[in-house]
Amino acid sequence: MSKKIVGDDGKTYVQKKPFYKRVWFWILAIIVIAVIGSAMGGSNEGDTAKKVNNSSDAAKKVSNSGSKTESSAKQTTFKVGETAEYKGVQFKVNKVDYTNGDGDIDSPDSGKQYVVVNITITNNSDDKIDYNPFDYKLDDNGNQTDFDSTVSTVDSELNSGTLAKGASVTGNLVGEATTSDKLKLIYQGNMFSDAEHVVFELN
Image (cartoon, rainbow, N blue to C red; front, side, top):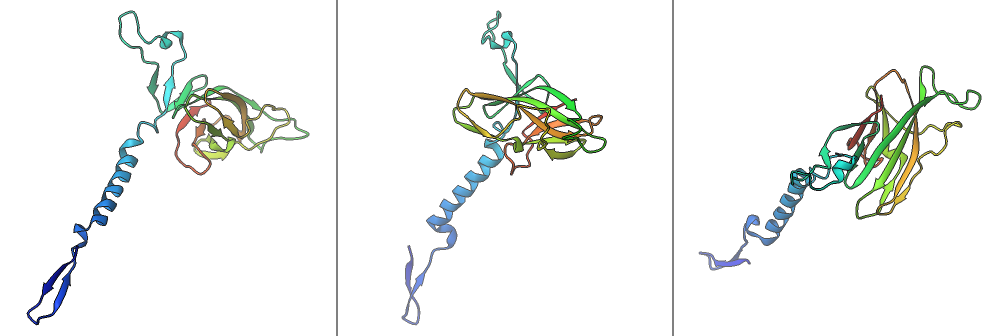
């Protein structure tokens, strides 16, 4: 609230509060601090992928000794056959195949082969989730390309869609790479993100 002051000349002046004493300044400051805090600390756990142990022993909540058995652990990269969980969604690379295509209809670039990644996505979260083949990259020694190849000899390609709670889908992602190189599958969350949320070593 402004304060009125009568000067030596008899005139009345209005003295305004400094901006740091105004209510709107502190509301804005609290909002900014809350946003920064959630970005730095609150999202760390959710942005970490975990390895899911599929063995029957891991399903037991209590072991013979009475202590809890861990069913998942933080992990940065995964192998073919392992199950990764990210924000309640599980990803499993079932197998990786290589093909030169039909030859007459389709063939990869010189020195490359088609890389066929069979993947299963399972929604264990409480919400519906969208899936899209463009959420994944094929990493060939650091060169990341889309899984956008279409091969006549490969069926059951993974398309886009939505998974309800508890639902799963299995399909093939097809890309091109030099198969003697180190290959990885990278899940980025969506096509507009550069963050590597889940990484599978393919060979």
